[in-house]
Length: 164
Figure (tube, rainbow, N blue to C red):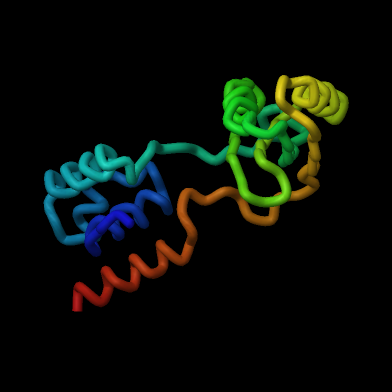
């Protein structure tokens, strides 16, 4: 596990709430200098703790009416090959190798159900794929967060305790 101090945790929590928060605002909240915040963020990036900055979007607003989480089973020894092939697809937003019911999980976006069915057929035809199990998303109750909310609340609590 990577060692983080309270200030690093607080910076991560503030960026998780709003990736566009300014360095000045973070510095003010943590009562440290802008330069110190900038150096800490750069160090978190170099260490591979902060991997990037993203936006959350509504797929439907962008013309993608159908989104599915697709479980993919593979031939023995071909998991990474299949996962890599899925990751290269331009319609795929997430790919993971898992130890659950399926060897690979992928999130696929499509213009409509007909488009999604064509994409599933393409995935079924990939070399090394044995079975494909799509789960169409009907409604999203909670959108992806970059870190669990418990990390944010713990970090906020620790920062407040430090200020006392």
